[in-house]
Length: 554
Ligand code: ATP
Ligand code: MG
Ligand code: MG
Image (cartoon, rainbow, N blue to C red):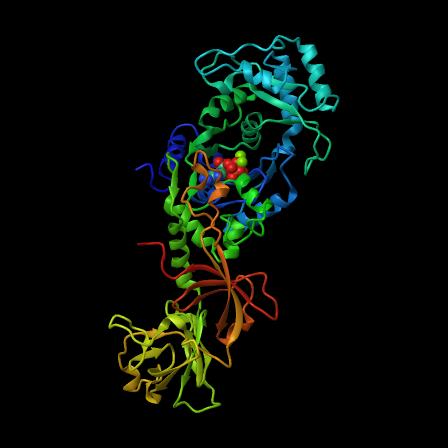
């Protein structure tokens, strides 16, 4: 089955190992352009390449594809490195396409001498017009037969900044009648008078992607260059460019393609994510609503949950839309094992235990994680006045309501069994207090007969006088549409969910005062939450990673 994890890619490698390649010749690369932050789509490519590196014991290069100075920045280089490391992968060599500018230039000079490249002095519109259509051959540029010496002179002047942007380009001289439009004398270099984040103002010409990528693979001796399917028609050009420089004493890289992975209710494209940042829809690339690795980290995702997600969807040959609930499933699975349980009330109503002594505080034992014995336990304060969730009480309820109601019993988690007795209301009839009684013999873990009594329903709570006020940020999907950027006549920005963030105050057990950014918890019965970097010593801020259950599932 081609869709099972790594299957068809591993098959390609296995075949090469049994014919042309030795195991120590394997080398892979992950080649981001530093024009934005990595997103969940990149995670698929990272897990593919670094995963292959791990299973074959082969090196994986991190190659910055930095050939477009207009969009690239050091900030993005740094963020990309941080995110890959955080995911738990180590690259062999940190490489930059810009380190190969001189070599690429020397090769371009050679191509001109071989009669395989020429300087075209037409506008890009004219060049595009002459490309023809897939069914009709293109028209040769009037500059196609320029002499070698004139081409060499012009290229050098382009390089030295003697021409303005758009005045000339260098084109490969291939075939203006090729059925593959990309082979119709593709542009190799354009003039750009822009500052490059690494080469500064040294270069006034910049190589195009196709001219750069395969040659970079060759320089680094990458054996398999995996890219997404839209590059399939580029493969012929990748090979043509390699043919021009290939020395058969060396390893010849192969480009192979796999399908892009898209995630529902978001956009996975750096360019589109950049718009969300620039237009202030989100607070930055690491806004917890962003599908970026840094956004997911801030949202409370673990590296393991992202890797497991990527592995579970695997690589395929057909593009598809993965529902975001799969990603959420993976983080729940991981946090269920790792996150300590705590009690926090998000929508409080006061509960008074009328037969509990006034002014007394009792410290009760609470297990930190039933999934992990080594997580131990902690003490939490219990007193006469507590907060519970408003939705956990109804004055009258049918038999299916297993929470608190008048005349019925429920257990307070880690504490006692209580029974609803009466309510206090304000002038408008809103409940301001619930009065109840507790069974002093029913303390959790005491082993007494009363403690073992079965009652339907267990509620979380906090002691009102001891509660820590915290800010809680509740996130929803950033887009209301599953596939916002595939609507023909509607810009994806039209589908922004106006209610993707709700900020409330929560009441937490006091031990949470020591929580630090990136600490993760299960708020019992509510979901998984993580401490945000916006927290101060006065106020801890929590982000909801995901509710406990998939509220979108029907
Ligand atoms: P974007 O449109 O977001 O800028 P890109 O493909 O231009 O994406 P690159 O920085 O060039 O971004 O990508 C680095 C690697 O990640 C490439 O090999 C690319 O094919 C891969 N990649 C990018 N997006 C996805 C995706 N959604 N699914 C799988 N792989 C992806
Ligand atoms: Mg790219
Ligand atoms: Mg891109």
